[in-house]
Image (cartoon, rainbow, N blue to C red; front, side, top):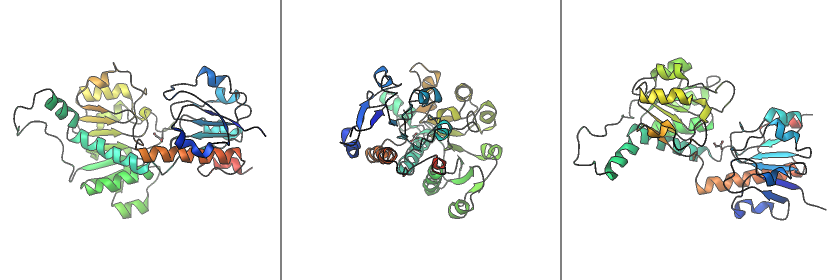
Length: 326
Ligand code: GLV
């Protein structure tokens, strides 16, 4: 019996994909693919499985060219790059990699928040450039965390893990989600607010919502202008939740104090983008889940999804379980 053909949009370390050995016929794109390669495109019509990263859009036009497709596995928790509704309509299960990256992403969020609050990029750059002349009582002054307010936008698993960590730094937690979460309020002493109130009260704002039509551009000029001039914005969710043009103005005109971004819009951000020239903007290349253990486990979970889908079993981590209801 011939093995099912699976398109892997990227080449990954073979040991991360060991469970697929001898069970699929794989065609892979390069390590650093930014789009589907012409070679992969030639196999679209035969592919039964798709293993993709979040940088490759999986839209209807592509699905139309994949008549034999039976499973889509995104090696990410977010699936905004995949047209899930269209997959559901075709009865194709879509898998993601939830939970496993919660701790790593929350850790990175705190690293970004601390780095921006204490101006680490500027201080490190000044030290390296010979501008550290003495212990300066007024140099590189940053923000205090203890007693300050952290506004969390999106109190899902990652938002909650950030709240747990932030409490250890003495931050007061306020949050917004689609509805109040009594369990979290009791456990973490956090308060549910409207977005408007959260923006007005917060010294730090950290974004952890998925990218949807409701959250795209949520942090726009209007929102940025309402923030405290001392506020620090952290985005470890998805770039388009923030209006980039408005953010450049907010940072350069002092509407807010600083931003720390793990994600940007566009992504990657071109090297000549104005955000890079702003000393109060820290940008890292979408590394929220980038620890050795987390990335390996994400790949393994995507493989579990892939094999289940190819074998006609229910995906262990499925974002559209309604495909199984018919
Ligand atoms: C990373 O951004 C993910 O969605 O896994």
